[in-house]
Image 1 (tube, helix red, strand yellow):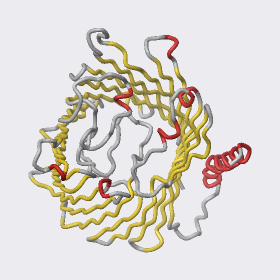
Image 2 (cartoon, one colour):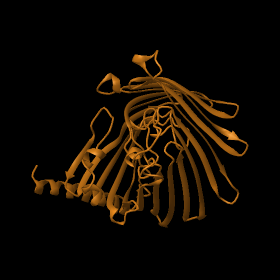
Image 3 (cartoon, one colour):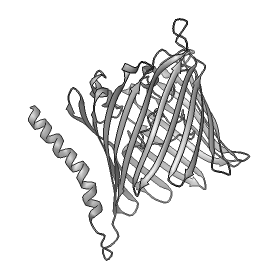
Image 4 (cartoon, helix red, strand yellow):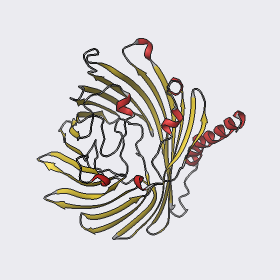
Amino acid sequence: MNNSLQYQIVTIVWSCCLLLPALFLQAQPDTSAPERNWQISGYIKDLQTNQFTINPNSLITGSLVHHRFNFTWYPATGLTFSAGLRNRLFYGEQVKYTPNFARFIDVGNSLADLSEVWLEKNTVVVHSVLDRLWAEYQTDKWSIRAGRQRINWGIHLIWNPNDVFNNYNFLDFDYEERPGSDAIRLQYFVSGFAQADVAVAPAKTWNGWTAAARYGFNQWEYDVQVLAGKYKTDVFLGAGWAGNLGNAGFKGEVSYFHPYRQITDTSGVLSASVGADYMFNKGWYINGAALLNSGGASSVNSLLQLFAFNLSPKSLMPTRYNFMFQTSKSFTPLLTGSAAVLYSPNGHLLGFLPSVSCNIALNWDADLTGQFFFADLGSNQPFKTLGNAVYLRFKWSYAK
């Protein structure tokens, strides 16, 4: 495809992405018309990124225009179809100085390839992906859903060893929907709070398949789940819980993974998280959490190790022991502030994550987020900056 035609296609696609939501919302509702059996929602975001170290010449800037389009259709009782499209336009120094940037963002472990890099230039990359595309049929007792979907088995607020189908890096704050997987999920609602799930996510090779069963129930005023299955090259067992200790919330998850071809050796990995949260009378919220990754590293050498490690439910952080403390407060109905501290004794990794969010108008939001990381890199490089980033984001949401 020649450059001229490529630019024309990108221009047309992005014009549609930006203008169609406005056209939908400008249409006046017809109060005499029957109730719609479909819904449209989404947003347009602008994210400005500034990455730097202590070196004043190290500043790298980047920009992202992010368009989200969700469509849900209810053609008959109990039947639902849904699709979600994610369009992103990256430009700036971040694209220029990141080797193979397009390949880095166009990564997925799904069976079908539903993504496209429309444009890849020195400082510009345009990427689209259908990260939701599923059909569901539901009755009072049964539900079956097939297609690209989010199977959320996580309970813990930060780290989810039970989330074997759709694990994610919590540092990626700009992807609210989280990744989806190509899967079939069958649910049976037993009674009350009891529910049984079976899900299968096929892959091109057997070593990429994930299949699991889960049973959730309520006991001693706790929501409890147990699960087991195959995760790629491992078999696993897991459990999770959510309840209260006094007035504080108490949640946790644990999963044990072991290669099924080496079932008698000691190569298994234990991934476990636990946390508590509490809301004070004056609106202050606090949350503390801990994560054990028995296969984690004993040191941290670079910021890339934090963001580009092989993320999986058995490796939710690259280090062995990890702790996090968060606090937040709504100072006014329109202004919220939060801060989090991440620490690992392995390499004395320290992260400071402050954020301020503001609702500036109807359907308009703005937030300022920082991510600052430090670590002990050895005797020749004592405790020092690994890297920092400051993000300014504006978001316009729409729905019809």
